[in-house]
Length: 380
Image (cartoon, rainbow, N blue to C red; front, top):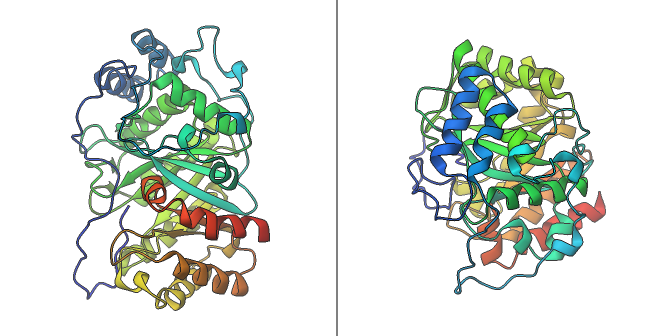
């Protein structure tokens, strides 16, 4: 995920942990369905509209053996007891991730006051490794990051790096059973060439989303299409969102994570206006530019919130995005607290805030979630 500063500034060097390279290596043995099988499944669904049938076709290859923990990994508290047992009505007797289906089931609603965490599944921690108090605070989970399986198409790829597919499906089921929506992030920086400019691309994209929803149990998507990799038209993206909403219902959440700079501000606002009620929240990325480093972020964030309001995005749909403790163009946690306090004072119905991302939070002992996220929830 990349947000940039004003157009006259030089681009910043990208040092942050991000969405995983498009050519990341094959998973270790024993992690479940092979990358090849997963990509074939998503691609066939995109091409043929076969839905769950292809997910079932690849399911026999997987097993439930999670990779062993790295002995040098930092210790974390288990949160299994905090979460409800998976809803077994969503799976067959085989309990395979390939049998998961939420197409006709209720999904958790977007929280009235959201504290969201992006979780990079190619890095630690896993959901089960999050401390109990952190998992209690976080009420909207977004997994990063589905990217292009074939540049110039809408076909997507995504896979967890440290868990079997069965295990991550069970984690998602436990989260949703605890009324926490779990979304799949789409795009990020250098996404490999996600393309949504034609009806064919729309069919490919929606087919891939069907595969991931039916296989893992995601309850929505977060669209983070950035100019570093993706290409999209408003007509195609609107058709994509409406297709998914029509198929899965209004409770299938769709978020827009946006970088507001140069011509991209008007472009995202135009998309939001045409989507209307078809998108559920708007998340401006308040990082990856110099003002994020200090108190200058406070007036800048207020300006971005007001720009969106003036452009037709109500403050009640806005979830502010932060990144902390990484490098110069990210924020000290204390600065994000100042931003939230100033923003909430002016816009008391703000929907919430998110933190990018779980690995950075682990490295800081979950400072943002504990010092900003938890009070944000209690005050809301």
